[in-house]
Image 1: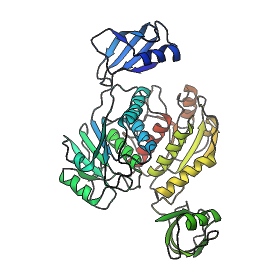
Image 2: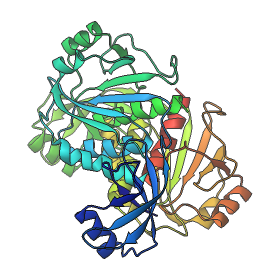
Image 3: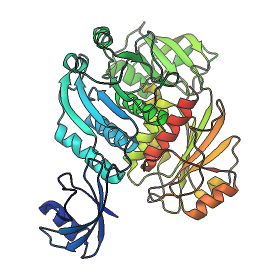
Image 4: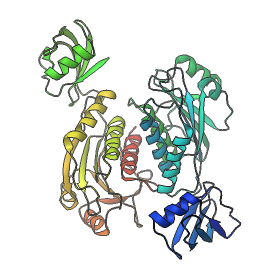
Length: 235
Length: 235
């Protein structure tokens, strides 16, 4: 079943024109013909069943046959703030897998010990788009451009806020204490961990220290562990 | 703290000679000197604190100062059997992340719908070795060479056996029912899923169908999800 990401689709209309790029892909690469069925996802929960009316290589016309809103709507809200890794492959891997497992928002946070001080959101967003198409999710997770730790940690967030760090100290454990169907923010630090000053600032801003188990995890693995725990506990 | 993987070390001896390759790395790359402390892991639970006695670039001599056996011994046994992915990067990611999170044995299983019919164990094993060094684990997960599904599924295994597949049907859910501190075998199929015949054969051999949640996961993501679940439930 061929799937297209069409964030600009109007759910009230019964017809949709694929972009020039997608039309070319549909007709020249996928070799779709009049009558062939396709699925569209709008990134906002809408899943559309459509069929090809005109297989034009520059302006393919689709007839919308059905619309499902709130398709597989998630039962909780998860926001992970992660220090982008030096090696971009690793953060790309995290974005793909977190999207498959389930996530609502990702923020990139530049910490004192961050080895990577910037990251191109556009390129990373494409990873997420590919992942929602591959795993057939109608909601497109939101990816925020990098901001400094101090700025991020002072931003408001309605819900339970956690900071996962590697130093000793009392920490919450989602395995012990967890409220289902909530809103969760989890911060994951860079390869060298958050500094004590960063942890203290987070604590002052309502973040609780969090453990992700006994193992020593890479940044992207820790972020995925957090994603896994929240989704699993909300099953 | 510099760490070396020394599977051939004799825990009874108080001295150890690094291999030529590791000696060159220790002296020329890491620039270690007499008196510098290093850590050795033997892959069988042994973690050794040692120091350099002779920083020879071809035959570095270490003095063993302390030995910890059963270092962070795991409280359960997890064996994941996975169909190797077409793209080797993906299975390599899985091996690295599963080793970080915690795993005891991995088998590569060639299924009817497998797009990859072979895989070089030596190269994949190096990924695991790097991961145990990076995450400081004294046990080296065992990686088995590819075997055909029919052969694998008939092999004995003491413990709970599961096959995770995507077709409809009654399935166990570890979130609902789980015995801690056990022995678990979980089979993960190829990109096109196990065939009904394969699932039936597994069932006949004592495997129970398993769900890994509602999301549609790639092979390597499903395998890591299984790894997460077992480790998390055993926390």
